[in-house]
Amino acid sequence: MTDGVDNQPPRLSIVVPAYNEEECLPGLVAEIRQTLVAAGETYELLLVDDGSTDRTPAVMRELAEQDSSIRILRLLQNRGQTAAFDAGFKAAQGEVVVTLDADGQNDPGDIPKLLPFIADFDAVCGIRARRNDSWIRRISSRVGNGVRNWATGEDIVDTGCSLKAFRRGILQQFQLFTGMHRFFPTLVRFAGGRIRQIEVNHRGRQGGTAKYGVGNRLFRTAADLLAVVWMKRRWLRYEVVEESRS
Image 1 (cartoon, rainbow, N blue to C red):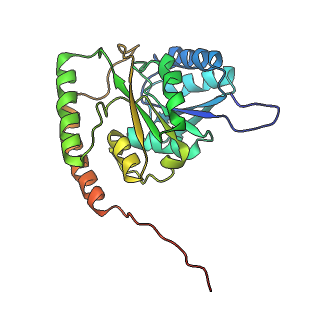
Image 2: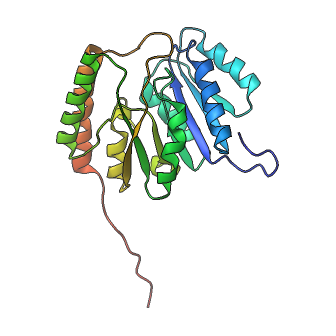
Image 3: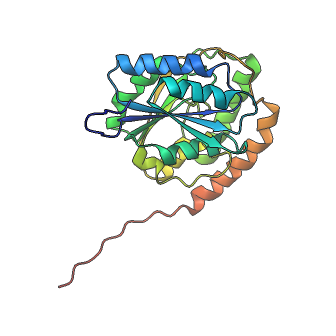
């Protein structure tokens, strides 16, 4: 919630992309509000509708009518999670931007655990401890993380965990393309940022059905990985000094 007295921007911008998540949003929004009010944080909650075909937009409007901290962004067509995150990043006003999924598997109660580290790091990435997923999802995630780290030279334990906190300044250096949400930590490093990783809670889906499975991500992720490797080799890195006139 933004301070209405001095009209200062909130400290936190919480960005939640949602595609057909009408069942999950009310409970998730309530948990976010309860957590951040108890923590004494000023915040805005950016709900980004990724072209949903169910009642998700209507549910968002109902929630916004009850909570002035909520801002709604709508993608007129389904463009994927990266596009939804990008829209949220560009609209965010807070100095710290926190991301999490709309399905409730990320625990909003963990948001305050990330925040102390943002003073010394440009991004804080969650690691899903004791994952509440099927064995095939856990194995595919472990293999995927290993391949990404091998190809990019990274050491990110859990790229698939959406619960992350970023300094807004580092996000402003991102140039995003479809599928790049899986590589946010790598893009932080490309921009010269520092990353901290901490364990967070992981829960079962709070309602609805999963939108992405192992099969429909495999080939897309492989293509995205090749693009990121290309970007790493060609990323502009230089220091410049303007000499003063004598």
